[in-house]
Image (cartoon, rainbow, N blue to C red; front, side):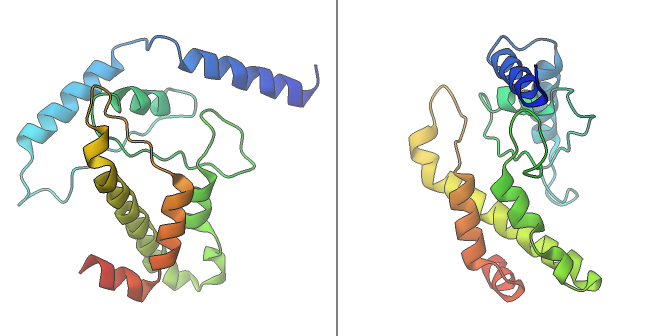
Length: 168
């Protein structure tokens, strides 16, 4: 079996496993954490409602988020370069939008530019959620967002000046 066939076989197996039953108790742990954090949330002392999920490759982060999205509104991106293999496939439009041409800026401008891109992308994702809000609330709360549409919208409104105007 050549390398390409072997890679395809592995990705097919991962895809099939993904559709199988979710194993382990990490889903229940995450759900309990989310509910507890929501109950304890104090907007005066907490910057935002975020929970980073950090772990090594192949440990089930994306699958866990896929499962939790069946119960909670979830916006998840797989940031992987187009040349990188993995499952699930990366959201290459999102990765490209966030990182494309950043190296042509002076290094001192990277932070501002990356912040503007991230906020613009999230603003666009939330806008899409709002637009779909009335049609998605059913037994399955997964929101299917179009990465391509988000990037088109984000690119249209993105610039440091545009970012500042849109968040005020």
